[in-house]
Amino acid sequence: MPLLTLLLSAFLAATLLPAQSEAVLTALLLGERHPVWLLLLVATVGNTLGALVNWAIGRGIERFRGRRWFPVSERNLDRAQRLYGRFGRWSLLLSWAPVFGDALTLVAGIMREPWWRFLLLVTLAKGGRYLVVAGLVLGWMARA
Image 1 (tube, rainbow, N blue to C red):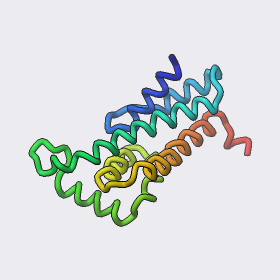
Image 2 (cartoon, rainbow, N blue to C red):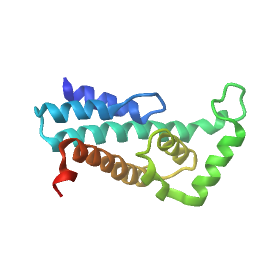
Image 3 (cartoon, one colour):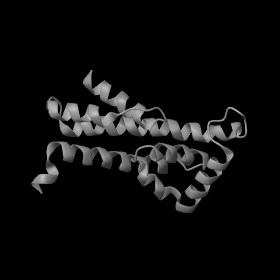
């Protein structure tokens, strides 16, 4: 059950919904009931799958652009697309960052980033973040 909780919290944290997966990961790391590698894997998979949902939404959302209920203004969407066009797929390495990282994954879908490249870059970014969190929680950085 704790691994499922971690998977779901990581998944939700990567979507545009507000959630906090680092707290769940921290509690499980400190509980020492599961191997660290397994916790990192579960958190990374959950967070990457959540980002993939954003990408999929981005792939289909532009057809609704300009409608009154559309959640992003025309100006902000154009700006996000220009920035993604300028910095390209490598900006997905920042997908680990709170708030704008989730928006990046949505814009990647709008910009038609191929799913395999999206998954590769986002998995590296998300996995790297959880590795740093584990390092800080478990004191790996202090030992170095």
